[in-house]
Amino acid sequence: MGASIWLDGRLVDAAGPHLGVTDRGFQLGDGIFETARARRGVVIELDEHLRRLHESADALAIHLPVGEPDLVDGIRSLLAAEGLDGSGRDGGTVGDAALRITVSRGAIAQRGLLPPGVETIEPTVVIQAWPYAAPTAVILERGLRAIPSAVRRDPLSPLAGIKSTSRADYVYAKLEAARAGADDALFLTTTGELSEATSANLWMVTGRRLATPPPSAAVLVGTTRTWLLGHAAALGLEPVEADVRPGDLLAADEAMLSSSVAGIVPLTGYDGRSVGAGRPGPWATKLREAREDWIDAVSRSAVAS
Ligand SMILES: Cc1ncc(COP(=O)(O)O)c(C=O)c1O
Image (cartoon, rainbow, N blue to C red; front, side, top):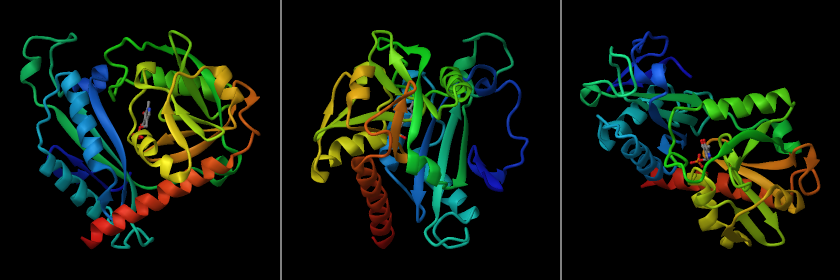
């Protein structure tokens, strides 16, 4: 993160202090967030991220205190202040950034999950920006190795597809991966289907079939996932949402993970065994490049228009 953040309508020093201890984001993880990529000052799939932010807010009855124009304005001013808007002040030329919008329910002194008056408090809204860091060359060359998490996802949970800041399950799964010497963990559902990784959706290629677990497998419906479902056919694959079990993953030709910031990253190991040939396959490379090219093209044309 850089020198500034955007907090409740204005740019402030990133060093803080910003929040009181009674903020429910701190006390309870009671909030929602989005992470996105920006290039040349253009937020990639902005509408999709804002739509999901609203869906998460609605699910948790968090009233967004700023409208979209103010959020967009906040993102623009933050990217400009950080030299991440493509002006070249980041040392590069295109302004590649990772963004996070976080909204907590706000601060309230009373204890309890829903104390009286909680519906009247003002949510806290923060935007942060970082220079974009692609996955390391080591990860792109050897692929990610994942383990199954002991945490199971419940497909019937109303929160399964919500991007809430209550992330203890995900942190726990990442700890499991780190302890096992792996890069990431995959969640299984309570019924034994594969769901997703700790911050990315899961894909596997078998022949020309590109499969990803459906929303009913308790996945976050990722913006990159939606992009892949829409673009894979033009790239020569048959995209499909399908229930997949660990045996399907281990039998696939190759696999990958997708997310807005990391992009499409090969997955070459699961549970101590090789996925596909145990090294990044041709589709992972092709899809990653196609997505990066698309990001470059949409940001270029948005700047030109
Ligand atoms: C749990 C989880 N699944 C999937 C994704 C991928 O979503 P997107 O492609 O919108 O970044 C994320 C992104 O942060 C995530 O946290």
